Length: 228
Image (cartoon, rainbow, N blue to C red; front, top):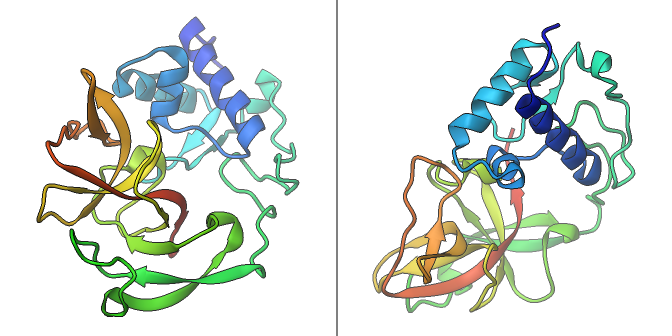
């Protein structure tokens, strides 16, 4: 097994520490933020080196599908640890337990969110879907289907349903559903700032930040549901 560079070891340490704390692996963006690496491609190159060394294994089509490889044991990594939620972890991308699927609430699946229209109006609700209570917050919640790949590094993929807590404001760093302009449909982005201005940030380096003149927060994302 090749000897790791200092930076490759640092990336591995971040992956291991994050997985130990959260029970699932970090995204490329989260690794970069921890190590002060602005370029996602740099993080990808270090992960590729770890994969070639057999220390990790990845599914490039999924942002958090990363697990320890056959040579991880040689690095002193025990892949049979227990996740913080108390469930057994297989690899670092799969958690069994921790969510009580029996304790669920029916949440409306909204077909479209538009400016000036009541979100939960009956004509906007396509169906009601049982959602684990852990994915919702007190107050009104709804489901919205995501289109596109602008949030893949946050683990939100094209076709996912996001669980949204209806709210008119959000904090920097939160993932939100927002309306940009007066006639636009809703978009899912991370709320932040660019040069002191409120911005909507993608979790995919292929997309530039959106710095809107008119912005309306619809709600904050509290969970993600995916059909397999």
